[in-house]
Length: 412
Image 1 (cartoon, one colour):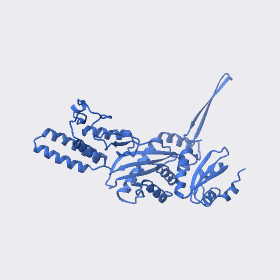
Image 2 (cartoon, helix red, strand yellow; image 1 turned 45 degrees about the vertical axis):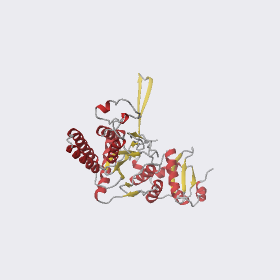
Image 3 (cartoon, rainbow, N blue to C red; image 1 turned 90 degrees about the vertical axis):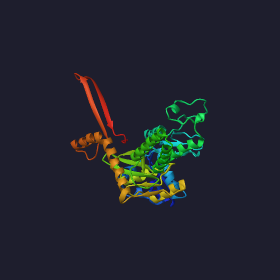
Image 4 (cartoon, one colour; image 1 turned 180 degrees about the horizontal axis):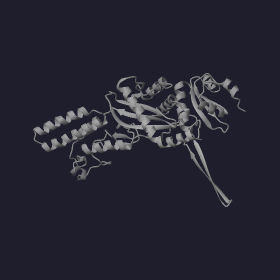
């Protein structure tokens, strides 16, 4: 028989992870602690607990713990256990996506460019992440339209050029119509484009246009002019701010009675390359601060490709520890910033605004119906499960009944 009061006395004064379980041994909650003894005891005190934690504690039959050497190890273990077990009372990030990147195999004599979801230490250059395959594909299509690089996935020498060469979509390296140096020049410009160095590309193209015009090669000069205009257009389309940062993520948050939405903008070289959003139900039981804190831990701890800075709308728990952990992981400084003014604050406000719009669009129809029902029935809280019955008979005999259930996805 597990005696909670007695077991609380046995808790060590060390960092670690604690696991709350119900009478069926199901995991209810996973948390980390700097000092296990102090942290776990707090759950069984009678004061300063949210309704969600009160409910969780009422279901606890027993708990267990894992001692770690330090707080950083506890944080990593906590995130891994949450991801593996998906406990009912934790804030859960349901994210099994891998984001697309643009890859250039620069070690090849005639590199190709394509989309991949696997980051490898293979000497290639990777650009991203892009929030959707569509945005990555749009950039790939633009590059292959305006730069005459090969479009075949498997490169091999041929005796005759393919159609792409004849429609001026490829320089035909497979038949030796272009030198490695000339082809590499195209690749270098593509890399500069993906890194946001459009001014340098345009400067190079202008010099080439002048040189071709002096040689009276006006047709080639016109092709370069069109390429320059296209690069200027796509650069203007992507540019979203004057923030001079190589790689930043901007996080916004919005909440209503049904859900919380977190929106992430991926900004690379002052250009928006994508966005993503996540929803968390039972928002009446969660605070924005708690949701944001848990989201950031679960989202970034096991992430491979990390930005230099992560801009957030408000402070989170363990922010210094997470910064140190992520910085050690990638051997460079990772910072969390809470902007107070200027362009960076405007960016946070834009992320918050987009989170609100995304949330409103998702929940408007359901919200209108459920809120109206709450008002009509004079309920204290929003209904999460509705059961409707219909009973029919024929002259009092052959009675049949049916039940229809409408249940919120987060209801258990």
